[in-house]
Length: 244
Image (cartoon, rainbow, N blue to C red):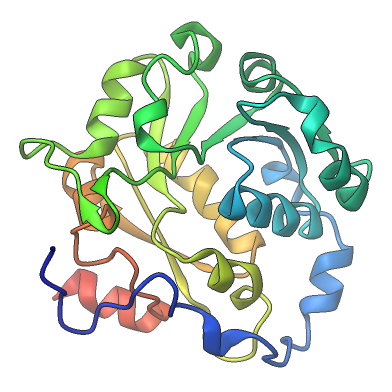
């Protein structure tokens, strides 16, 4: 069994104290207004489990369009599409990737390789929100490589950004509109423009984007076993940690 890191939270504990928090005064207005025009893009989400479904809901609430895909086919997403309304659509993974301007992988890490033909994400921002585990709670041994390094190797034409993988889905669902200081979402990548795009979406969702650096070193900080994984930090706490 993996040794618990001091201060680390079990995934089932993260975010449970955030239910029922008072929304920020501007949260209702933000939900009704479209996202800033230059960041308003169709986001593809591959993987519609708990975390992918939450991301779809908060993106639509922030004024973004989403196209959803899963391994079972678009016909299984009817209830979710009915809930999300006209800003959401569904397709098979390859078609969803082709329709999206930015793509988020929220599938098990073991499913990433071969999931898509590399050409469909050529020159697109590909957000690696996957987590590599060898078993329940145990980080996979990747021989010193970051999991996002491998994603970038499998999809060499994409601009890979590691992000949206460190926060428990229950926290993600409510913390962006909760009172108090914004919580941080991290970005790591080798393309500055791609990170700016992802940071803009994080801001639209009510969180604070914090850059952890290049894809290799910054991604390792975020993945399971890294010091930023499963640690909900405020923007100030995250910036202080990054600068220490």
